Length: 562
Image 1 (spheres, rainbow, N blue to C red):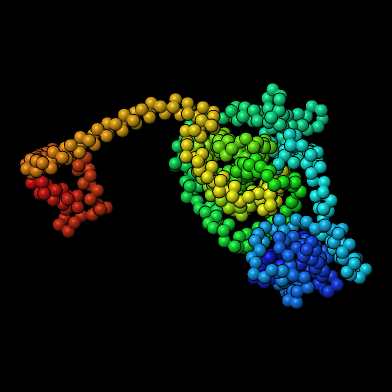
Image 2 (cartoon, rainbow, N blue to C red):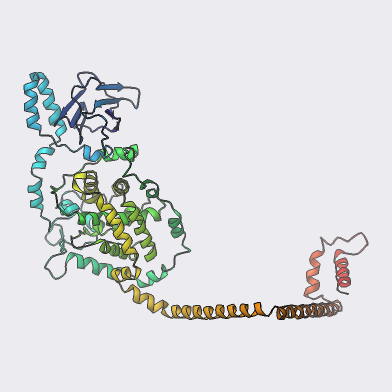
């Protein structure tokens, strides 16, 4: 079985350099083979057991004098650097970091082999054919049948990305996984596994969408919602609000500046190792709105968990993401008639039912973060890579990668399938929904407004009344201040009278203290004042005049009062 090596791509004005990791391999002229095909846009690299096929948007210069391959066995246990000349020098090649799109073959294998047979010797043509057949990875025959397979699957009975999957849980999953991973009611009466009413547009009595809504309403706890109504003192909430997530530093102008260094080496390796599925054929004019809504559903679940865990996923992260996303937990799909407001409402509704913090304000805050993420296609890919890693480490939710994450990563890396202008539109639509909190609560449902009015209605009236009285009081104070400015002489008289009253009060207090001390001195057991004075005694020691410190202190106090 051939191995796809890890690689990194860089470029200059005239050349493209491909740094390929081939550890523990004996490289020679006979074992190393590099072929250009498909108008010099497809690169075939072979050095057993490594095989690599990359398809670029621009062409290379054939038989360039400065094109070469350098092998360094000491760096990372073996690396080969291919230096290829651009056919048109000075042109910047975009999206070289989208390795998922680069690894998708587009060459016509048979026509290229026929052309090579005419231009090369039989021996040379044989190994070219072997390289091309090995690196084609059987994608061409599959690509020709993609439309037929999509028609066979059917949009009304499938699920997952673009409803392109069927039989995943029966063919690939262990027994019982669907019940543990999904909330969907299952039918096993015939010995198999069947989703009840998987089509939300079904003419049956209860559709898939209605069943999900009924389940959410039955699991909603008004008492728990009211307990989390004010979470300002919650430690996890405070940590989440103070956190600075990675997208705040990476979404600034990363799409407008020509850079192929957005992803880290680990992320690039992950992108190159993903087994991307074959996507359904995409035609110009197809509406991508349902797919973008699905991405928003996944990003909200990711943001909620990322903020709540301070960017360090826990054992509950896979459950958090799956249960918050109706795509992962109910295999939900979206219609062309649905909008961003529907996704925002349903995501916040699920956040009020299942996870730790069930607060509308926190859900709204998570959506403000999503609006920042969707401004950058690369940032979306980074977030989905983190989701993929979390789900891949779970024994219950790993199939979510095959159904949604991997197809979305392949779709996002292919610029032919979507328009980046949709990203700014999504961010604008999210911000517009969040600007109307009352309408959002009504769309969320579950009588949130009625529950809050029933519990906090009287308090709100009292607060309103208190606010009115404070306003009136402040008005009176302003009037008093205005009057005092006109009567400065009266203020001086008042201050003089207040000073006389204070002097009289102090004299009276002094006389009262003297009488109290005289009474306590006559008692056998001193009162509280004398008891407090015993604290001045230090281990019963006497002063230099033969009396205790307690007696000296009492004498000084009497003299001070007299």
